[in-house]
Image 1: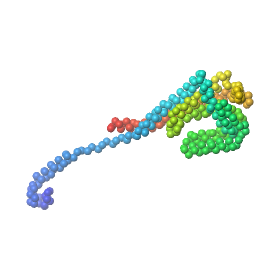
Image 2: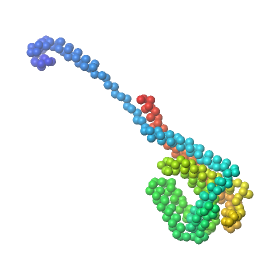
Image 3: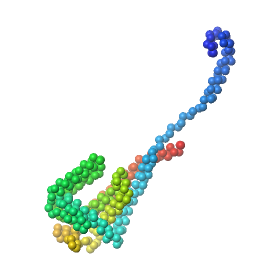
Image 4: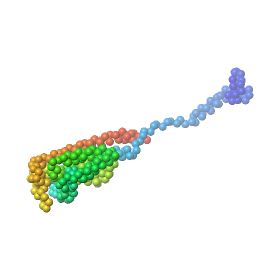
Length: 316
């Protein structure tokens, strides 16, 4: 056998080393004792439990914003229309009518442009040409197409669809046999459409200036709701309240022009305005439902991340 200390080779029955003099039995016991003490001196290191990934503060902030936005979208549109309906039924209807005069005259002007006529909206009257101008047609078509192209480049698909719809409306208006009647009808009719657009800006994307501008967003909602309810109450209310007659220093009122110059009956006049208002309300209802669904889905996507965050905080 070999000596465990000096490695000198001995016979098998030897009990001590003939070279270094150690006793094999005692030396091996001392080596084993040292090994046990060294093992006890080494601390047992326990592997840490895997940490759960914590979402960033931006994720939690995004869910809080989505919850707040869900509340806004659930209440803002119905309350705005109800409050506006109550306002136009009181003595404040006259100030509201002055406010609604702006989209009314803009409605005349936009309708005139779509029929190929120049137009300038003023406070109480809109000046427009009697004959079609192909220069106006080309300029407006180019502007709509360019706006649609920019929307396509920015991947704003909703605006792309709107640009396409406006081009279709322009084509229909250009082929109308009575563009004058369209321009007159476009006063309150255009006000209904413009009011719907103003209300729809409340659902602007979060990265837009409309969403970030708190006062602008809510102000346009209130302006649109007041304008819409003012025009809707005019044509859904009693017939004796319809604005027939002559506007002093201007001309006959729009209802009088449509009935006396273009032969529309009072029933047709009311029915067409009410139908347009109904279409606008259906659009607003669809937008309202879409707003609730999209925000709810956004909250649902953020929920698992928040649950992970809470579990991580409990383990810490």
